[in-house]
Image (cartoon, rainbow, N blue to C red; front, top):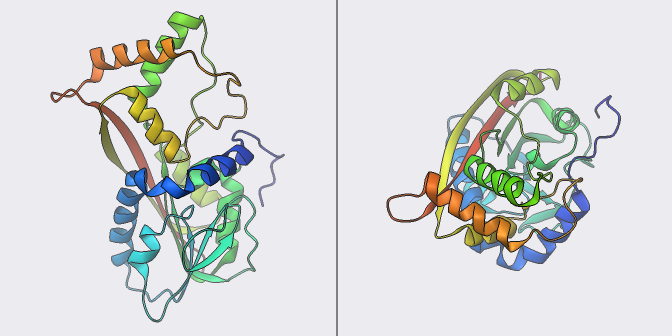
Length: 264
């Protein structure tokens, strides 16, 4: 665990509620996790190890687990709801209930950026890895959603006279590298890739983000609905600044990849 005082940035209870609400329709909104899973699997295939015991922290998304399936491999899929396929466990990434040195490989697909204490979570992950075990994870980076953040913040400032907390704290590459070293991983490698999705309008975009379970979870978020006029102005600004030749609105995600080993 981290030696810091408890940190509360994300409303994890709200995250659990939203995941439960959107669970049945999650496959309609999981294109980002699927893209990240493919990139994670590509990195994994470069490592010539059997990894017989695997923990998948992918929020119940089974894309990566299905790609890793092998006769000699046991995969435990852990998420907040315990609804994953295969060997499933209801687990909060902030408090991993596994014994030390339980897994040869731990993977995380787009979940760790929503924990309140990422340094503490990484320490826990390193502790439950076996000697010479590996962590491979993908999480949102600091250059994600730049177009949406830009337009929503300006629209809210123009119409409401201020900006409510909408932007989740996110890490960049130097921070990620420092966190891996601080958590005790050896030979840490941190890199990033960008994925851009396109939407017909900002309202479809927001529905997709909610369907991913990743709408505003800031603990200090505005507790009343945002007026529709804010989104309407944000879409106008979006089209003025970022519209694609086909009329679609781009939304950029930076995916940071963490790769490190527990000491032998």
